[in-house]
Image 1 (cartoon, helix red, strand yellow):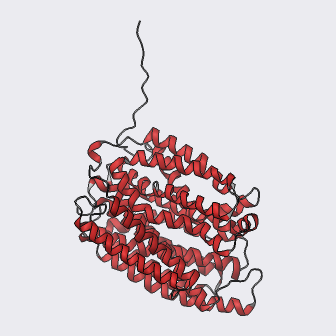
Image 2 (image 1 turned 90 degrees about the vertical axis):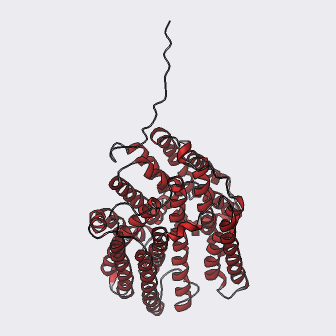
Image 3 (image 1 turned 45 degrees about the vertical axis):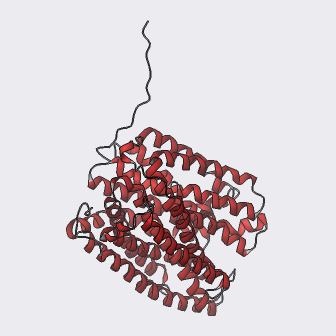
Length: 485
């Protein structure tokens, strides 16, 4: 009698095309989308949550802030763990925890419980974010395919970030706000199935055998977490307040301790000598610039459309569609710039586009939606160029067994930039316009004051983004394919 054994198909180690890799690409894109959309999805529902749970303004700020704080603080640690324990394994655990925690929203009865839940979701998302991009590199050997795959990931991720308010507003029109989190569960399940079917398991030789640097992990969490909190506290409590100054001092102390520890330990979580490579240093700096631009424009224009223009949340969300469309159609232009001029020049062009777009917004906010949309298109061309090139260049410049840490460093730079951009716009509007934006119809005087504040804010941001992004781009090489290792 012959016994037939059924074996589960083993995914190929690499794929010859994006079409052949559609299952793992779809799964990784779903995972990345749900991470990014969760950053902004609840922002549109905060008034409703406040009414249902009885939370005050500060509590509602922490509903969104708790997620960003744990997410940003744990990215480096999660990337380091993935390079040791296995990237696919850590991603599957992160997806399972993220989906399960999302269902727990049905048990939430207070804003305090929701804040704890959001913080826990940020931890799970941190275990997913650096790994989704790292695994894209493992799917392909060809550099051009990696660039195209990273483009897809960035478009999906930024679509999630931009569409969050629109999707949230649409859902709230039909069901309760809890469904904004419950929907994460089936998405996470589908992503898990796709990752198991299409992403190959980690090989021991692809991982690092160094022991996990627990003191380094604690210090990095403290440094990044306190730095992110400082930016939030500065807007909420004032930059000269005791709590803000204490968080600044704590962030500086933790950073100094982290650097000293990483230089002395035999198995550092983040080998600081990597920053001697211009590609790693420059790509991380330039990514901070892109996120400052993206977050400041998103935050500022949401206020502009809903308050100054008086648009509904859904219409305000639709007004951001030029960003998504340009992300898609600008792909050939960005690829041509990289192939024709190399990474350094292409990123300098992208930095000029972002700075020019922000300068244009300082004029365009008073000249209607068409002027704003034109600036959004120009900014997105710059974002698309710099973000893709720097993401690929940074990971390519890392050792083969540190790719997850490379993408974690990339994501951390973007998270710091996002916090910085939001804090800058929030602070400038508070200083130049008002600390409390009134609901309902604005007076002509307040609208005029708001436009004046926007002109100054976007003008200053044009200088800041231009200097940061161009400074990072200058440290890149002229490579058109792979950066020097």
